[in-house]
Image (cartoon, rainbow, N blue to C red):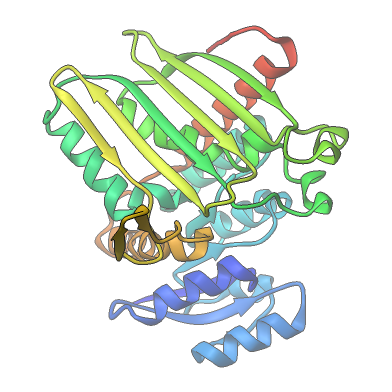
Length: 328
């Protein structure tokens, strides 16, 4: 039985607590949050204790920590967890700075503790199935990958200023998915972006509409398009074209009922937000972490995967700023 503590009792902490609740090989023993009310609510809902972060890091009855706090707290928490010998499940991004992530890697490797960077989309049943079939050679070598990622609406402007920008906050998931599917590292990044959804996002120094092209040494291409607006729901699609055919994962709809009348065919809207769209992925992600730590194997994605995605996001921002491709 793996004993887990959750750091950060907001929306994502609640998602992970629900996943742990239904596992036979893990239990939530403690929670911590900067605010008393959400910590008490989560602890009461799941039969856990509210403790301080220091107490959790020093506790003998805590084997692993889930870091779901704001990104600017991750660095110190990772170092403290590593020093305490805890297995670490950390939400993306590991940190906004690649150099600080490298410092975290040193701490994690020095303490020899398991670490998972929570790129939950790798665990989505459809995306995981697509990657498995691609790796198995069903369509031969991938030639061009298309990833579309569009949120139903932009986040509050108050969030934009501290988000790190669209590439580091939103597209970082898609950059990791690109690495997951390409099977080799991109060597060049070219980005374009605009503020078409809300001019205030542009005034805050960010973009809300962007496209990135990644190229590998062998010539494989991945195109990613992101938007902060999709009036029809949460748009999450992947297509891989290869030498022998194509694999495609479509949107998840609110239901599978289709209507056909004289006016044409209609279907349900896409699921509206990431919590419902990736509910199964979150559960599978946590199960993988628990099983890997319990078995003494390395969880994946690793902290190095977190670093590489951050480096791609940094390169995309640099390309947008310069108007030129960036070589890695």
